[in-house]
Amino acid sequence: MLEYGLFSNTAAREGDPDLYLTVTYANWAAFDRGEEYFNAIRDKVIGSAEDMRSAGVKRGELREIGSEFVLREIKFRD
Image 1: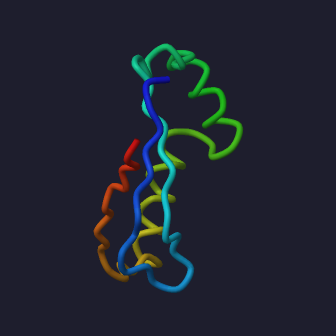
Image 2: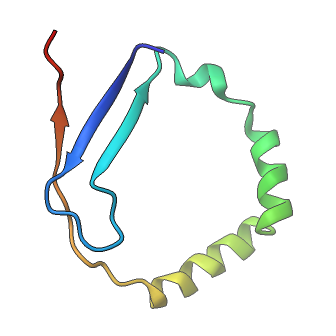
């Protein structure tokens, strides 16, 4: 772990977080368990790759983009 970050959502809508805590790692790939591991989870939860693609098309019909937001990094002084 390299550092923690704190970001403020300056114009949060109802239901949006106003603060985000992030963690930065030197090598995120060290957490990777391989494609086979994640494909097995996908198959168990969602189904096949084709099932996932068809669900994504249907999801697009339900989705509505509300807005965008700007995050500002908060830095603490020593």
